[in-house]
Every structure is written in C-alpha cells, then in structure tokens.
Image (tube, rainbow, N blue to C red; front, side, top):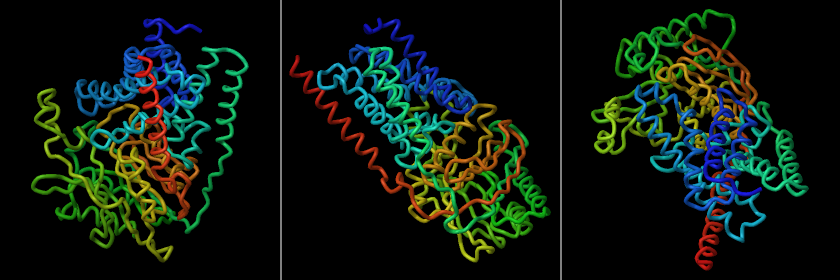
Length: 502
C-alpha cells in the first residue's frame, strides 16, 4: 500500500477521531477504539514529522471536540470548550510528529507493533500530568469499560490498557497496509490478547466483611449552574429522602450523599446543621456528604462524615479542576475570555489522603473509606494513595448538575467502573442528578440509576470490603516510567539516526 496523499490522510485521521469518540460512554461501542487507532496509523503511513503533526491534530480535534462538548453547557460559552479541545489535541499532534519521526527510521522497520503503542502511551501519560496536574479525560483505556480489556486495569491501569488498545489498532492497520500471512498473524495475536484478557482472574469476594451502603441521588430544584443557588433547599430535600429511607425495613450501615448535597457548610451554619443532624439521627448511622468550606481567600471542596450532631472527619479535594474550580494565571486568561470570572473564588487543594474512618456498629469497628471527589476519579494516583492508606472500598461523590443532558455523567461513570477494577475495591458513585451506581471489585454493576438525568434515586446494596492490593497498585507508576524510558530511548535513537543521515 502506497502512503496516502495528504487530503486522503487528513480524511482518514478525521474519521479515526470521530470513530474513537463513539467507543466511549455514552455510546460505549468499545471495539471502535481499535478502528479509530487503525485509521490514524493508516493516515500516518509515510508521513513526515510536519505532516504527522497536522494529522495528529486533525485526529485529536475530531475526537476531543465531541468528547468534551459537555464543557459548553457547564461554562455557557464555546470558547473554553474549543480551547480545551485544541490543547488536548496538541498532544495527539505531538504523537503524530513522533510517530512520523521514529517510524521513518531504519531502526524501527518491522517494529511498529512495539513502537507505535509505546509512543502513544508515553504521550497519553504525559497528558495526564501536565500542565496543572494534567487532564486524563479521554484516555483510550476508558473506552474499554464495556469490553473484554477491562480486566487489564487490575494489572497495569491505564498504561497497560491503552497500550493494548493501540497495539490491536496497529495490527488492524497492518492488514490494510501489508496484507499477507505476517499481518494476518499479527492480527490473530491481537485477537488472542483481547480474548485472553477476559481470563484474568478478578476476585470480588469479601476479605474484611461486608457493608450495607445507602446512596441517595436527590436531584436539584433548578437545572444547570443555577442549582448552586438552591443549597439550603437541596439539603432539606436530602434530609426528607433520608428520613423516608430510615422508615423502611432494610438495614444499612452508612448513608452517602453526593458532592454539593450541603454546600452551605453545616459546621458553621446552625440551620443547615439541624437538617443534617436530623437526617443522620433518623438514619442512626454515619452520614457522608459534600460541602464547601470558605476562608478569607479560598474555598475548599470537602466530603464530611457526620455522626451524633457533629463532623467526625473530612476529606478535602486534592485536585481542584483548573479553569473549572480555580483559575491559574487569571489575569492572562481573562484577556481571552471573561468566563474566567465565573469562578469568583478560587478553590485551594487539600493535602491529606482521601480516606475517612467511619464507625460501623454492626461490624464493631471503623471501616476505612477511600474518597475521590468528582473529577478526581480520573487521577489514578489519588485513589491508589487511598488504597495504600487502607481504604476497604471507594466512594466517588459527584455533582453533575451543571453539565445538563450531556454524556459527561456516563463518561465519568465509566472511569469510576475502571477504577473499581484497577484498585480491586467495591466502588460507589453517588451523584446529585445522575448517574449513580454500585460496582463490585471485578467491575460488575450491582445497581445503578437510570441514564435519564435529573432524577431522584435511592440505592441500598451490600458490598464486599477488601484489603488486598492489585498488581496495578503494587506496581505503582512503574508501567508509566518504563514506557517513558523506552519511548525516550527510541526517540533519541531516531534523532541520532536522522542527524547521521543528514
């Protein structure tokens, strides 16, 4: 197969990005991630670094613009959505440049099955960290939560899962580029890897007992960002739902409210404390809820445990969302868009691990809850830290009220499911408006609210508690570091080879 001309290559790249978006929740056609990568590889065949950068940018825009379209609703303007999408796409452009640089060298001939996935994961992992702590949304691994590759999360997290996705995509492209027994064998090996992934053992049994968890999705009186102005009404509604739950016959050990369920801090407002205390008294067990704590300069997003009329613990969000919860370089970015001033008070980050010690009377002991607030679920290192500090299950409180009827809620739910497998913990996502769900440590869905957003829902499920760690958690950042080392070595060798040739 001859390298495609630039117009054809551009069309292939654009199609690849659009197709890959369909692999992610809400559509969840996971197999299309392989096709999307294959189209990108086909478009880059024979490309020089400059055109590789362009083709990567085209693929990235076709992927990120629809994937992140929910940010238009949350901000109310299109410019931040466009800037975020372009910035994320630049990472794919860098991948395209590196792909063209390395694959054009003699040292990479016949080694694409190794080089292409390594380069992709190296760039993707960098995107997860830089700048401002990175933005993991859209990692290829998260497209596989409904597919057979999900068990790989327990062995190598996003790095390994994305590596295999790209490897399969490259094998499919090989069938088109160079048809024959060799390419057919590579494609067959890729299929074997995909099928074999389903055989990875995932233990969902209890190791330290079981816990009955009630999760309340209380909805909001007003849709969109305006819901934030109804904080007291929202808290009173959660109280009423909790009291109705307590009137039932089913016992439970803890009650979870979502992020922003009590945004007026009950620790400093007696009227709100009265509602929270009444709800907790009715439940007769610890109540966990999200609130905002303000100081003279900053605000803090916290998840608080409440018992016997007072807070018994609180976790402060460690990774506020840049441009969503705080504005870095505010003066500069104000020149680009006045939307930065919609965030009037910057959110500061917490310093302590995401764990809460919750007394469970039925078990006769405290249970360690791991907590990641909202978008923190996308940052694996935070939940890994929670597990390292003894978390026996994970809780993801979130507020999706400002994203409207978009796919943000289901995208986030997919990441939560991935984390359940990656860390081998029962995981509960509890949302203000949806989607809320319970997952077992093997990724199985125990219960979930409907995909119809802005609905009220109450869940009550018994989940296994676990203390062992997965291979992924034991390896830590080693998969990422190994990928970076090997990828940098290959890039350096390609640059040296190019310089000698010149």
